[in-house]
Length: 198
Image (cartoon, rainbow, N blue to C red; front, top):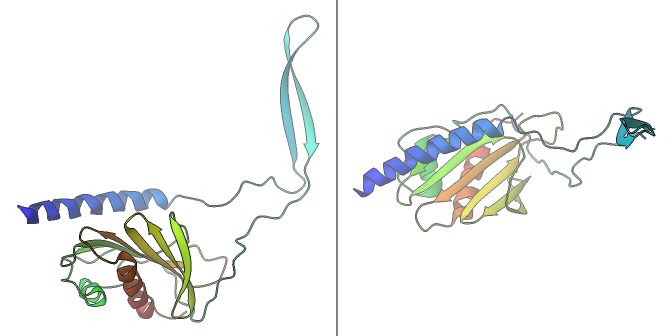
């Protein structure tokens, strides 16, 4: 009975994470900025002396502005390849890294037993939610991100601003009592060491 619930929960979490990742793939970060030299217009409805509605439009030239960039410096000791990938670690490598029984299938989302955790491991956008603490993994800037009982470690693979997916994400959702940040750090370290250097 317990194994059926675990299998069903794993299937539901896998589908939810897969659908969630598909939705996140479209997310664009940043601030909307009007192009340099562009005009902005303000429209204000008014009423004419004859009682008919009219519209007054006022054009205002804008001053060029610089796009906001992250202010933190990213330390990169070892640049890594950043091709999007889900199959960085095999189920056996995941089990070895966290000291558990192997997952049943490879992929971005794997679930282990003893301890029972669901992990997400992929190369992705450097975007996160939750409380982040800056750390280092193998000399590269990384972030430990707590969100409730879940914990993720995001390791920067390059400091190239033109890279679309410059980060490795190892995320752990516990179903048993486990040090989620410790597990996420072990997974991120093992995956980082396996990704080829750039």
